[in-house]
Image (tube, rainbow, N blue to C red; front, top):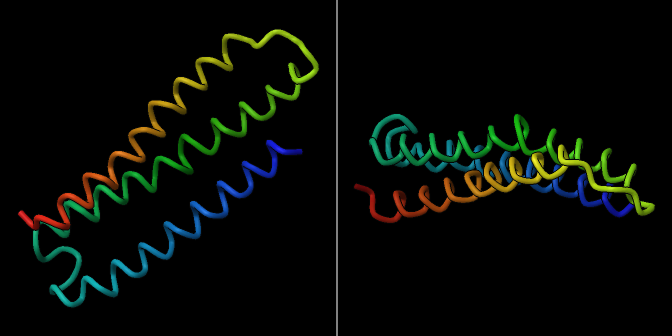
Length: 112
């Protein structure tokens, strides 16, 4: 039950946050002439878009697969190698999905 709640809240907060940031980006970008006008704004929005796409394409399905697998070994069974490969994939793509917005903040602050 706990894993299911973690997965649902992760999906709900990530999707809601991404939607709100996307909407506000388009609204605020109009002050600069649109999202495609200055290069720094286009690059920043693209980094965010890639980060947002990683979540539903890779991270959520991986998390769901791991949750299903964890039920099988929750009562003391052996953890299969596939679970650890999925954990590595989640770590790599989760780190990437986190680093991209950090790069985005850097670009938005410096406006190169």
